Length: 303
Image (cartoon, rainbow, N blue to C red):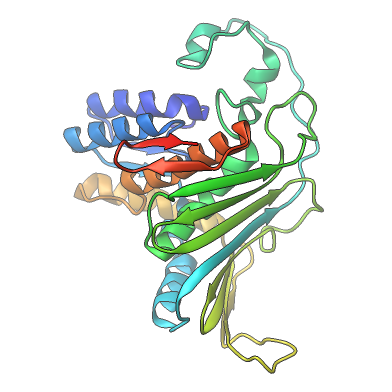
């Protein structure tokens, strides 16, 4: 399922009711309600659905999670994450041939046919949440996995003005997520920074009371507490440049294995839902300038 975000839910639901197994891109859904509908449909039909958060199938990340679990880093109350790179422009184009604009809009608000929205849907609230959501869905999902947590209790997002012509969502944002498991996570996406290699463009730091554990796209490093040190040196480290593409292949392989075995895949719909709800809270916060809170009893965002 490789459509704009606002179409993921209905297509997944239609597919599983038609007896199909599904690999769906992240984020799994565009609203919390859609996520619950997906879970209900998947569990009712007993189909296999893999959400495309491929870090959950990447051997390097499995090693990192094991090291974090066994490395005695202490209590983690703060997680810092970032993803920096450079986005220069949006796509300019016009419609060529026929397009069923009404079908493309689906459940999104009715608007006149607009090539800018069609070609750059990523940056419009009706269909997605920009790089903030596209990149945070990966990073926040990995934080949920490493921290054994689910939906955050509250999310606050700050963002600058969009620096891409005509779009609605800024390429520079910081989100702060509060979790009922008593930790705070921050994630900054900055796509007006300098360009980085795929090995260096992102990092998550798990700040434990005994050690700090850094996990990059293709690396990890464990730093033990040493209050007298002027330079920290890792007690455990691995860097594997150029290996991240194998994560997607491993994730697809896991999906196909589960199609055969009928077991849950590495990124099941419940995990995808927790991440997509966090993303929905982030969008609500930035759009309305509020602290978005999750009402677990009523299963809805408030703020």
